[in-house]
Length: 71
Image (cartoon, rainbow, N blue to C red; front, side):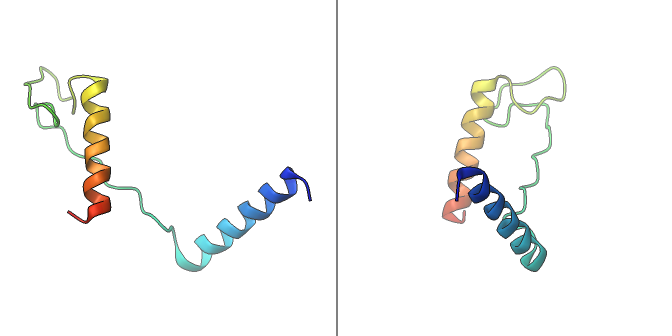
């Protein structure tokens, strides 16, 4: 069995699991813009959620960590 066959088999198993049980991990709801950076709190002129890609990445990392810990 080559890699293509293995990949196809895995795709089919995942599809079957989704049919039986629904999506295993629902996508988390996106946070709403507040006019302030959701990570550092700096005010934003427009309705963005983060002031920079660095703040966005740090917020996503912290959010994933808190979700894993059940907080």
